[in-house]
Length: 393
Image 1 (tube, rainbow, N blue to C red):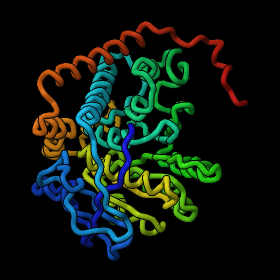
Image 2 (cartoon, rainbow, N blue to C red):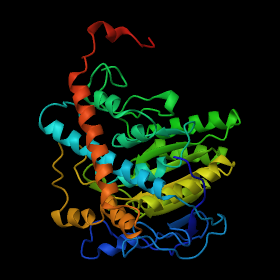
Image 3 (tube, rainbow, N blue to C red):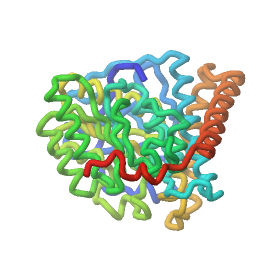
Image 4 (cartoon, helix red, strand yellow):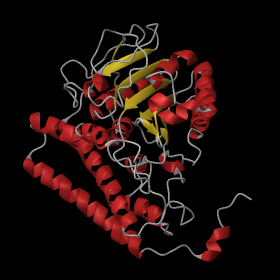
C-alpha cells in the first residue's frame, strides 16, 4: 500500500447502447473503449509503457490516444510488491469462498455478499493508499477491511456475530467501520455512502490535509439520487475523493442495459465537471494504475475522479440468490476472465511467481483462514447486557 504515480489515459470513440454484457456471442466487446460526444473528462486506461497489463489480450482495455488534461507517467512495482498484490488477491478470494461454505453449513447465519470474481478492484484500489486515507466500502468489499489493517480473526468474528467482531456482535455484516484504520462502515441503502464520502473529503479539504477518500458503489447505485448529489457536490467543491464504480453488470437481477440508457457509468462524470475513466476491472494492474492517478490528482487539489471498473460477480447478489436471471454461458465467459488466474499467468510469465513462492503464499492464506475460522468459532457470543453500551441515544 505504498506507491504513487498516475495512469496512462486515452480518449475514446463515442458509441451508444451496445449490450456487451448480454451479447455472449462477442465477448471481446468487454475490452473496447468507452465513448462520449466530447473528449473532455472520460478516458480509457492501459498499462504504462514497458509494463504489460496483467489482463493483456483481447479483453484488455486498449489506448486510443492521450487525454490532454491528465499527464501520463509510469509506475514501478518491485517483485515483492507484485507478490504482495497476489497474496491479497488469494486471501480475499479464499475468505469469501470459506464464507460461502460456512453459510451452506449453517455456521454463518447472516446474509453474505461475496465479491468472488471482483477481487482485482479491491486490491488495485487499496494497494496504493495510506493509512490516513479513508475507504467507504460496499457490502461485498470485505477485502478493503483486510487491506486497511483489520485482522482475519476480527473479520471472521464479525461475520459470525461474535463479541470479538468489529461491532461486538451487534451486526454480522460490513456495517461497522474502524475510524483509526480509515474505514467507514457501509449501510444497507446502496449509494448512501457516497454523500458521506463527500463529507469526509470536505473535512480533509477544510483541515488542509492531503488525505483522500475512496468510495465504492455498484452501477445500480449510480441511478439513485445520492449518487447525483454526492458527485455534484464533490465536483463543485473540487473534493479529494475517488468514486469507484464496481460495474458487475447486474443490480441484483437487473442487467445494466435495462437500468440505464448509456453503456458506461464513467460518462456521467462529465456532467459533474471532473474526469471519468472506464477500465478492465479484472486487471489488478489497470485498477491500480487508474486509482494511483486519481488519488494523486485528489491529493494535489485537482478534485474527484470517477473510475468505472468493468467486472462480474460469480455468485448471486447474496448466497441465497441462485441467479437464475443469467445464463451459464455468460458466467463461463466471465469466469474465463478470472482476475486471479490472469494475474497468476502474468506473474509466472514474468518469472516472479515460482512454484516455491506459490506454495508459500497458498500455505499462508490457508493458515490465515483456518485460524480465523477456529478463532471465530470458539469466540464468545455477545453478552446481553452489552446491548445498551456504545449507544448514542
